[in-house]
Image (cartoon, rainbow, N blue to C red):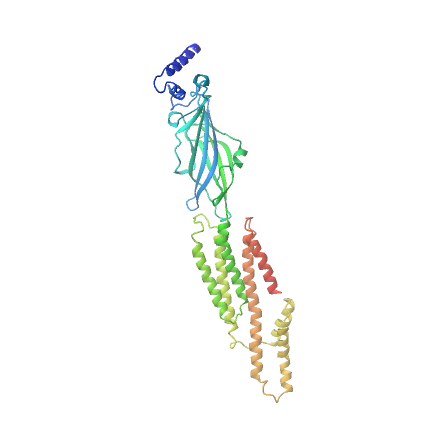
Length: 447
């Protein structure tokens, strides 16, 4: 049998070499005809059916084309490589002018049915019609693929989010006894390889993890799969400049608005202008925020809280202005309230204002001055009543209402910002700076 096989091989080679015409001396043509003679591309290329075909695959991410948060779809462009041993595509290089590698049409050779499980749409990939075949039967199938896959995108940390999308390669039909999968390179090399990645877009490639798994659907037939985890991170500079900084500036201006006198009408109009400006800002940035039905990003909650704080600030300003201008309807302030607020409370709050103390002393000396100067008509009951009920009530309201309402507003704003900054997301560092500034500002304003 061995001699018969050798004679048949020599006969085929001589028959191919006896071609006449323009292909008489074409070595590649003779080799291609030799490999195609009697080849069955529909049969798995093994001589012993008990042997499994080992397919080695490799993946290199070239570009991140699109991340659709609403539809949970990731579009990438990858370089995919796979190779396997075809036992029927073997030749002796000495018989064909020492040719060790030849390219053959993909349609003429057996190709494993390895697909990506997460495929949701057919991408616009170029058609590569050829594969390389070496003299020892190694078939190399290299091609670029535009992959449109389903991915579970978590946008809670937008725009500081990190996404982990998987690409699972497996044979759709053949079990592990027929087709097995392995890596062409080591997992460490695949993880750190960024040689072909275009690093100029919105997304940055962190690493590509690979994991081999053997699973069974019905506990009878087992399948081999190779899963690649593509970990990408969004660059937040654009969103920080266009979303976070304008919102922070408007909130700082709202805090500065507390320096306006409460008895002036400009404070209310200033607060209303800020509220309208923030509303227009939210309308503009609504298209920039990712829309999804799964959850709301943290930055969306931040914008809602800022809007609520602006409304609370406007409400506080309206109440203060209302109470400041409600002078004629107030009754006489008792002496013990004056002493409690202007003497005892100032000691507890560390407030030392000579203007308030001198006014209190003047008001306490007015009855004695009035008794000793009965002939003077300037110090009448009307002047005393105006002094005690108007000036003191105005001071008292400005101290108590402005202090407690402003403190409540500052404390609420500070707690909200601290809640965002001390969450388990390490990247929100701008809020921590705002917290320090607000804490120092509130401490200086109180004491």
